[in-house]
Amino acid sequence: MKRRNHERSRVVSNYMQLLHQNMETVYLVLAALVLLLLVIVVILLFRVSSLKKRFERLMLQDDGVDLEGLINNYKLMADDLAIRSEKLEQVSAQTCKDMERHIQNVALVRYSAFEQGGGELSFSAAMLDKKGDGVIFTSIFGRDEARFYGKPVKAGKSEYNLSDEEKQAIKEAMKK
Image 1 (cartoon, rainbow, N blue to C red):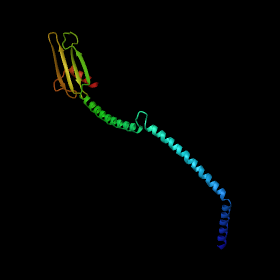
Image 2 (image 1 turned 90 degrees about the vertical axis):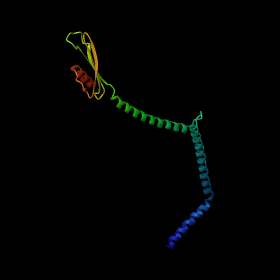
Image 3 (image 1 turned 180 degrees about the horizontal axis):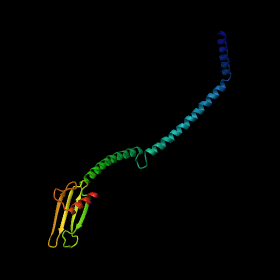
Image 4 (image 1 turned 60 degrees about the vertical axis):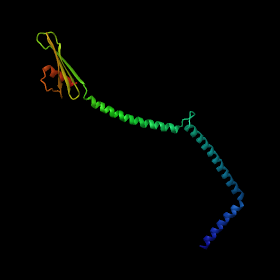
């Protein structure tokens, strides 16, 4: 153990002696490292300064509008558009629902009401919504007179008696 300690102390003393003999070289190497680090720091300062100038130019345009303000304005506009879009979707859904109650299916059946001829001047016109609710109008044209009347229709049927032509008009309208 003493021998190891003695060897260690001899190695340490050799290093110390070598260090004392080459102290000028050590100082020169350390000075060179300090100068190198100083140059690196100066280069980094120039880069940071350049980046800072570019960032400031980007953030503040010539017209006085800054990029951050523009981005915030666009975000507010996008939020507003999202709200408006949602409202439009609701209105559109309600409009589609309401359209089911509007007349969508129309059919016209022309016929000759009397055997005396005169062409197909009589007609039955069915006007129904998507559910088959609506009205059927019938015009019967004769030689001496013409009659026009309407009947309510609910789910493709009427509480009043329907002629064959009226039934046909309702059937054709329901197909559409």
